[in-house]
Image 1 (tube, rainbow, N blue to C red):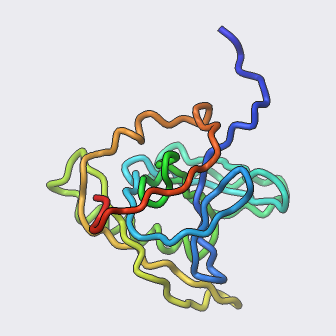
Image 2: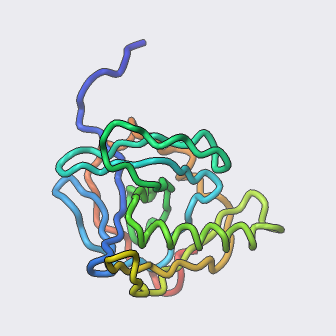
Length: 191
């Protein structure tokens, strides 16, 4: 059994919310690709929170909390660490064969949106044990934060579905393929 020390270019496909344009993009081997966010299953059952540092031109660094109820102390290394989250998101319609992507950020607007979404999930999950929420993007709301401005995406739970098997088969080491074209929904909702 090897140590898996090769640098084969594996990466976690991800999605990003850009507050400046109230738009979404996903990662490809050729950079970010814009997409229209409609609905996706969010694995809020396994969301992770912690301290993130996004340095210019560097891979993000994370110091994750031991649990949602146990906040890890902020690193004291001179970097600008901010509270953030990581959550896996599933949609074959929007993401094609790489149907599970990570939404990981410390951006104020996205953090505010996930905080509100998680509160809604907590309120609605009773009676939906073992199921995950289908989340719809309903636009964004401009918000003044401190001395600046941002937009907060409006994310709402529209229903609960059985946990997609795709969540169970994704690991960082498995993700090596370039992003194919997303599938086109044949009328109606994917979920």
